[in-house]
Image 1 (cartoon, helix red, strand yellow):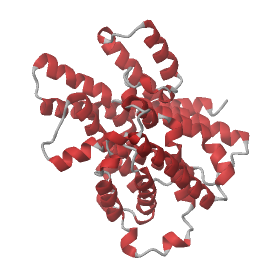
Image 2 (cartoon, one colour; image 1 turned 180 degrees about the vertical axis):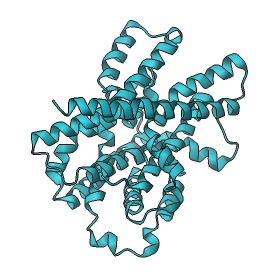
Image 3 (tube, rainbow, N blue to C red; image 1 turned 90 degrees about the vertical axis):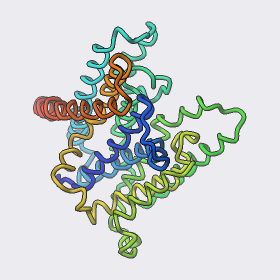
Length: 354
């Protein structure tokens, strides 16, 4: 499969922004500029980039595959498993081994961690957020759900991309209306609203929209748009501007502007694919994009080290954030080469022969 260079780089850019959002949450990081701090505090909207991008890339990678064939289905699920699970499992295990003594978990907490994290179903239980590295890896649970349903979606909608697109838009609209309306309800508190944020069913619309945008590549409407509207830079700029709106903030669990941001995300990914963006297609960005998965899954672990630097060694917040970033780059480099690539190649060579 030919690598889409601009989209590989986009993965890292999104992971990088989410890293600083987590630094704000876990380490109290602030830039000191109101606009930048607002942008970082709304950084969770970039989780939608991951999910839309996931749908788009999977549709691209499996465009010619026939999921009616059992051998194709088997190979697909094996490759998806080896893609995310080994590095995720090791990152979770290392976290618990290192920080075991400082974790005040009950017996029930440990049971839930072992079962839910082991089977990647923690996203269905939002009160798992504070356990282990789930404040970061809940999205892998969402991705695992997407991987599960992807073959069925392709079988149903590959030849009906417009129908899938309109279903995704309607799905997004329904979620958006409920998210906004709940802020004016006396029956829904802030804790209940957070249920939506990590729920795979509340994110499925983003994944479906990504798939539909890939299959709309022959759409006359998209190809007939003026050149300016096909500009990836303009698309990215608009996404960043809209992410600053209040509806994209914490009050609306970062999902109150989905009806604008999610389609815009799919639109941006589509034109990044076909028009490219040289600015982010150099070797450095490509390498960082390839390591972005490891960069993402180790970030909570890196920030826990940052907390220790602040608490026990009197480091400032900015110093701790800088060193957490360095730690995370190191972890990502090691994880990518020694876990992701190595384990994936070994497991694929063994499991695909069975």
